[in-house]
Length: 320
Image (cartoon, rainbow, N blue to C red; front, top):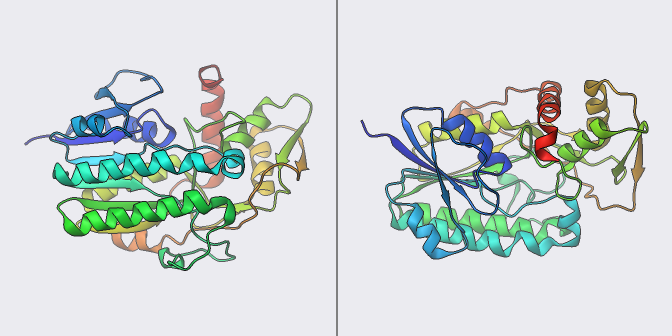
């Protein structure tokens, strides 16, 4: 029986690396790991290929004989860039995904897994289903460019799914955290930034951006990886768009308090309201993922915080 050939784009990034380390352990799969600017980190049961996914010729050379594409490559960063340089999340992401979608269809790739996001959803006091976003939904001004870019790419994926032969899974995931996340203060999301501040704190005080009232749905990375594995096995429909999140939200202030408690540190929290922040509340209703795929998150927040802190302490010198 021939091995299933899986191409992981963005394999040196946060999500891609976690997927690579998990899936490449399967002896029934041939795994190709794509990198660009960040050099490969180790050798394993997979093959590295360097490619610029914004260049058609590079994309074309990747797909021969590929059965599944896991598209984890993207231009991403934290709230500072979202507020001050929102354009950086638009052009390259549109180009690379447009090229990959078309090339996958032409190469008759069986299955394409695309990571969208959840920033198109409005702020809400209740967990939102996939149907909560409609064409006339107002996207938060700070997310306008990146949000509509993701929506456009979701529809492009649906278009290619409808003309075949490639099946598409579109994952609207919540805020993901865990090992290999970005922890640097300039590019990290709130979880990674807060972990770094707490663990590196020397004066008994940390400062958070905004007022701490923003609420986020936080999902540990292995739960996302589990869904990817399940969708590869179980999705038969040409197109599926699905929420993947923890299902409830937590305020940034409460998150910081929990990180401090798990780290066993005595730290006071102050707030800098002059810094960029996006005051929204969002949690994802993941009933569809449970009903169609039998997926549910397994890692509670406190356990995820502890696992991330343990990893950070063991890898600080590698990520400083």
